[in-house]
Image (cartoon, rainbow over all chains, first blue to last red; front, side, top):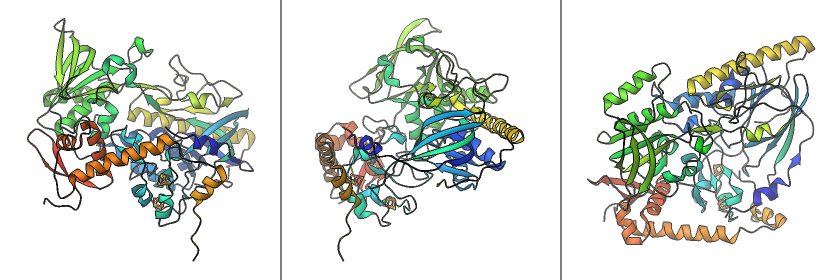
Length: 459
Length: 97
Ligand code: SF4
Ligand code: SF4
């Protein structure tokens, strides 16, 4: 249904003359990219942070709380988002894509970046949402994983950074209502994509992860059975920025009394080509179960698992706490999920402890999907050397110097190198920043490279 | 004062673009569905998803999706919750009549 308007406009992309200079370019504005950028900036390096989406924050911002401390996820990420936006040594480019990386020599990268038009003048936009209110086009909202709609003119979420509107030109019906209504005169459909060339001495890749597409496990009915949702959708239902002030099931808005979790969906599963454990599914499911019992005290929560991997600090205690709260754990692989006429969902599973096939009915079923690499776009842009990845596509880093890729001057951190939880991601991002800083310093000593001044990069 | 030309009009003129028919049809259909839900709640009605579905003939999941979207844009609010765990919704600013 989408028009190919963006493609037609992209054809009109205009190159910007000159070369911008930075010490480092960080690719990806999730928690890892923000952490790495801030650490480098604090050490005095000039950083360009490039994010593909219209806002930074990544997936962490969409979460409810973090395990095992149950700290509020957005309370941790929001200050970092603001710090990134305001740090004098960081230039932030959102809604921008790396199209090419040329390795010119040691510590010498030339990066081509496409800045897509928002069709909104960022200087003028006040983030008032008037354009969003008047826009007649409603589409499934990505940030809520389709649980509700968003407009063709939209602000990703209330605390987006930058909090600026963006027009989804492929789904725009060119009615002009947003432009007529905008009190700041910020809507500008004449904006065109700009192509920039950037010179940097180092790159940190923090492109995060993709969620396993649950519809690939056809026997689980995701996308066909309305009350089968993914754990990320449940995160949205539980988070402070959630669509509604309660957990409601999508088929009819009922507050569920009985919720089943199916673990290891798309991970530890050779049938879908992902034999690896996703590291976080057990714990985020246990966390959600605890939060659900807080939100819906009378609900029953059952977790169907193969084995619980509670390996981190405080994880085992967190697991035991969930049991003590009344979360039921059933060791069994779910074979099939069926939708029932009353909206409920039936699971057919093998109860491993009892050694027989059983079935159970729930109001709502949550698929705890695994994590997949999200590096393909970046890897294909690198020219001059090939970035090494492991057999699943995560960036390969040297175990003796973690965060160092096979290409000198290119570092990687967070889920770009493999699935991991938030504390490990932050730790790895800080490590990548430290390693990158040491590299930049050694380059300076070697080549007497000056600290780069930001030539004319805009925010 | 002469009316400022919209950049939207310039875009349409320069690129000669029109929205695809499927998109405009989708928007029309969507608006019709949303209006059905709104009309159902007019006059101070407080209804559950199921009740709106029965009155409008729309599937419950469609009604719910529109209600959640309208909730985000401040058009509706939740009233009481039934014993079965369903919320009743009403238009914002309208009282029970
Ligand atoms: S583009 Fe205009 S109407 Fe939309 S949020 Fe910005 S200032 Fe408000
Ligand atoms: S011109 Fe496009 S974005 Fe603006 S209100 Fe109309 S449909 Fe929405």
